[in-house]
Length: 496
Image 1: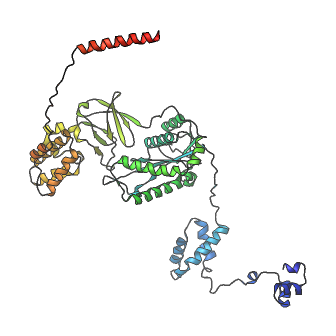
Image 2: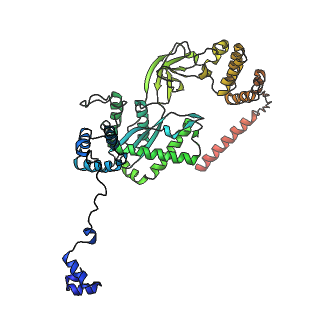
Image 3: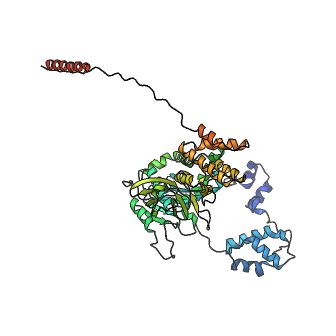
């Protein structure tokens, strides 16, 4: 056709290398060969003809969200002799019908984020990671913060639910690690932040969350309820972060950590690596962030609770032991996600691990045997029916010893020996070593010898060293004084 622009059909055909007949045929029909193909017709009759207009289309109009398999099941219920192999044909026909006649679909509008404007918070479930602390499965989730522009992120291990305390602590940790504050903070409809009133209620921020946002000068926003993609800048990041943690755990070879702090350090390391890959964008966004306030604001709840004669207090259906000298006093307790900080007036008196109720009908216990062992030594038989007996034992070996002694039929001896060993562990600070000795004896099929263990873990006798003190003669001080006078006169002479 290029030659035909300047040459005759015969000459163009000769230059192109085919016959004059082909040239005249092309002149008569300029379509490409692929355009001349006749569409292939049906090889068998349409099995949906009897049902399409009469039954299938009315179903699609009445229930726009119904699945194809649901339509097929309904057709087969109405017509048992219908061949189930029509599923693929039905899927193609329904998809084509919906493209032409179906309802309008939601449209996702891609956003361009400017530096320093938007930070997002959300919680994500991490139970599939299978993390364990000292052999016990850790029930937890992650608080996740992310900047929309640069992708800076921060993760905080949360042991409880999606509470305000967890949100406030995680968000403030993220902002102080970042070194600046975005202009806007977005979350989903967290009950910790929003009262979640009726749809027409605009001002439904909780007072604590509003105060938190005011302290940092951030405007609080949230996505529409049930529309997760509006929070997509952090929802999609959840999956990326958890996959990075999963890869790191596979390389580590074990999901068991010696302590909660070790696991938190592991999470911080993985997040730090991800932030290092975005260093340039993070540095660019930091220039657009507002400065941090002078200090953090409250990220805990506070309760004033009396210490009962049981040697502790009950907070949110969990009993906590404290030193018995605090019985009768009222403690000011700061409630964090993973701990309680206790104060007598303004004096700190201890930090306790945060406990959780066992179930809807049963509370929990957080017990430190050191708090009650002095009283238990005076009343060892109280151990038999003690409400929190299982939580009293600091290690499995002590519980195993108690149960083994009871199997021998002597509850009194079981209580006496177990309590004395707990007291020994406390007094000699040998809890782990003593537990190992108990376990070794039980594994060998014998009961531990209390007297031998006391002798083994008693303080080592130390002899008082003989120190010879040689007193200096007083004449030495006179010599030093005369040297100082001579030096002073020499300096005056030099100055003159």
